[in-house]
Image (cartoon, rainbow, N blue to C red; front, side, top):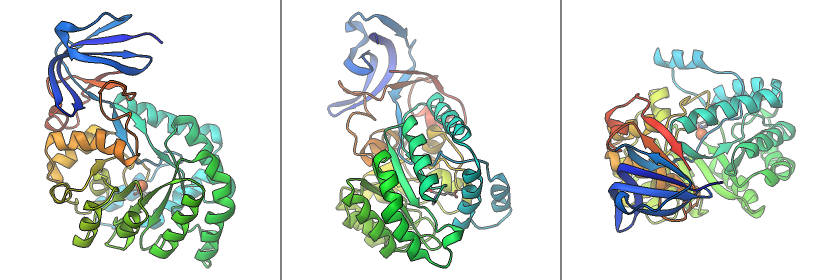
Length: 378
Ligand code: NIG
Ligand code: FE
């Protein structure tokens, strides 16, 4: 791999502590990592040169929550919701049926197409969960495929209780924490549970997360999507890297998050696609909670691959400024994955940058729906 100089950057967001945003800047990537950042006038030579022609550049986005190993879509459910029907966790089982029927080549091609779509929209780091297989064989298959696409893989055997265990949910928890975990852990960095009415209780979630931790997996949790629950406080108690959704959060949840190492990952595409109320990012930020924004890309509750769209929603609907939303989609996502090498453009960073067809990063929210990512470098 050669070195690349990107120069004449009108506005460069690096998130360097003393100078988070530079103007008339340049940056050099060597072997995929940032090797130099400074004024365009001082730029060193490199093997290749990209002239940004005054465009803004931001760190490659970190999408810390997606479910990409699936077959089929559920556009009919979306249409029904837009006509007034409620979102229910049970829809997951439809995708499980179609995913079990699909072969690996189809599942991989589908997921790869979405990862490519994400990259065209500036995302360079993506987390991918299993969770539409729900048998030992199908979950392991999903984890293997996810591993082909990203190191940030999450075992979500506890997405819902599959139909064949409808009468024995605790039997399914035994399977998830036993044979299924054994089969999936070698391909997983993380373990996650959908802790919600209609999915898994707080006590079941605790069992599953503790089993994952005992296997060396990092912890994440879906909680507070359909109502308040003890899930958020469980995530904090177990030092999960992230608790995701947070559509419904009590004051005690916010207090617990504020004093913790657990990131609150907001998923505004879900509120968009389910017509649920948007949670307040402002409330979390004002309380001192670390906030991330991710797409939750999945065929049920949020079928967007676009971090720029989520940034625009977070600004318009969650009370965040454009800069706060950008931070949440870069540094915030990195923190939700406990990574310090992506989500910023300080020397050593490996997540690349997105060059925008815009003079400043605020255009990501100011020009919603416009394909602003001109090029991804690094
Ligand atoms: O994050 N909440 C659980 N899982 C997904 C939804 C999956 C689906 O509806 O297929 C989510 O929203
Ligand atoms: Fe999710």
